[in-house]
Length: 380
Image 1: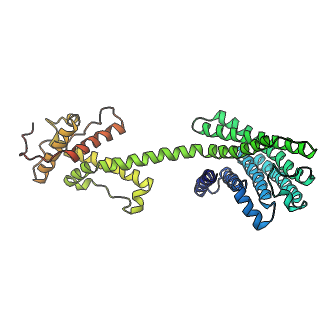
Image 2: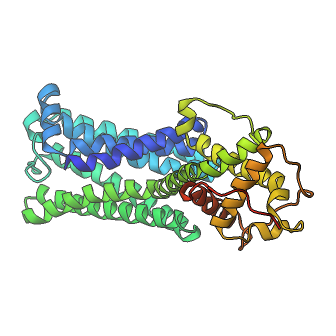
Image 3: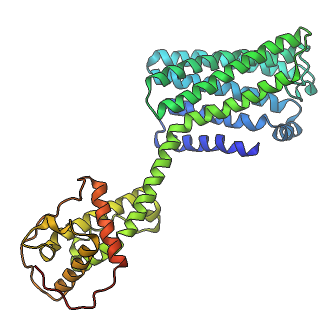
């Protein structure tokens, strides 16, 4: 079960990172506090962590802290929607809800403090609900959670219908998780009432409700981080592709830089850190493409036949690579340009990616082709 702690931890870290970039964003701050409360409450539901807390702070402490954190989780979740609506009405509503959750938290804390400590040492299943304070502890928290989670699920579902993918997918996941938590809390409140009145509830039913609560929290956390995680995965894929293409363009870039070193742009940074930062990789990738294209325009008089610059890039990559080698050799010998420079056409397809693929194909041909051993051929 400890493996599942990675998801809450990742969600909290991601939102904290976003908060550092927008520290005055009230809705984002509410989400961070919500996720932090949820992430801290999750391990307290596990026997190992709960036992450790109870051993240090007394029996029932872990249960009390867990329930207070859950109350704070749903309160801050409501604040997210209230702050997102904007205006003084939302802020006034958030303050009123703060009073309500504070009253509930104080009430269940007093209930927990007025019973013998072992009464709350066990789980929800083993607790003696015939003790009024114990029943109030679980029932009061459960009723507030049902109310707050139900409202949050309703608002989330409303926003999900208005949104587009991938945001809608994450919102639907969060709405389902919130709805499942609300239903589970309502069932727990009914179970508390039945057991308080002296009735009995099948143990498998209570265990199943507990599992639903834990899985719902995980689904909720996955939902609120889905769109951001998906964007980061796509960004990582683009970073890897740009870094790979930057390396594959090296043979072409080195050959052209030898002939036209003045076309090499000044790098913004040459630090090792910049080589691995996303912005640094993208910047160096686009700069290399610009340098290659500019140098190809300058070298076009040595490549084209009768000034036809567009025909040069229509050649097979191997043939164009061979002409580039010969052209650089001529430039190195000081031969003047046989004709005017002409702009070279974009690759077939006309888009940026097709153009880059064309340059990479020529660069790969330069990497693999053997150096010409015969004298320079007569150019047309």
